[in-house]
Image (cartoon, rainbow over all chains, first blue to last red):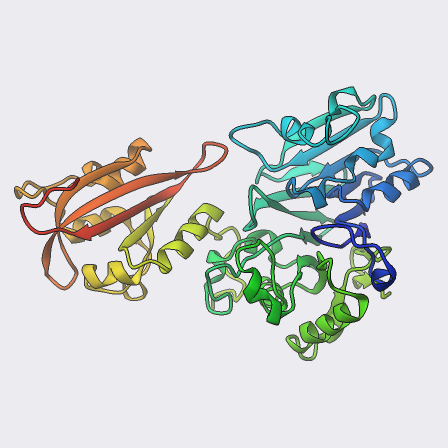
Length: 291
Length: 143
């Protein structure tokens, strides 16, 4: 499978001269499977250019896997061109709710006055699915969702294909109220789906000196992100969900902090950036782009 | 030798993890059962009443835990596990409150008010039970 990062900014899009290197679009990662299926992880503003590309590079099937419905993970959906392609089948997955169906919750955004087109009026054929914890086969991969610690119903995703594991946990605060370093793995949010990941994309919104002012906001500081990844036995960590106030230079300082926590394995820790490609082929080393 | 990454599939459910984090920060005695009825945690405040720490006791089947406490009504009638607040929350999936008497691991017999409620997830699935309890003077009934 091959993953490409289309947006890795958290909270709100942050375009500008200070964020050119790592990008200002919000969360969106495409994972293209060997079967030709496309898994789109979140529909932040990064999904817009992906939709443009897909006009000339159609996947076998499109599955949009939403981790949750905060706007930075949903805002681009109305600008995803395949949604307006008559008859195209699009599957949207998201966390279940006991109160409202996924389609109703998404339609709260994709309807006036917040958006000019109603979700029910788009010409493509959209099917909604609850992202449950049971493994689901899609094309050549098996997908698992798991509820994780963030504000509101939120899941992370584990994608397995040909023995390789790609895990996406963009919004996750596993250290909330606990000492991650000492707590047994069985008591760590997200541990099961992250366990043994070849590549883990994980929330790393804050420098450690910033985290204390944001406890309970649903995101991780660097220490928690790296401790979580170590505990899960991740092969490589891609720091994701960059704070909108962090410039390219500040992100690189954050990367230095993160790498200091994995002495000897510094090359396995990287910052997500728009256009980053991650290749996981059976039997070959994982390949991660550098900016 | 145990796997340093933990046993696959052994992670507790998120509601249980959050309940444990809450309990560990409270001075209110609190214990947790998982969806299989296993006692999986109690906090330090509970330990001071139960007469042993959770680290010493470890995960224990709730039946065994209940038997060890010799639960009884204030009148001295033995209280079946499924009639205790935690038992009702677990078996009947509803909150319950009771005044009861229990013997701690250190042999102390105390009267408690106990309230328990089930942790039922967004899809209706059972995650376990939270039980809070506090010592009450003999003859004092719960509000």
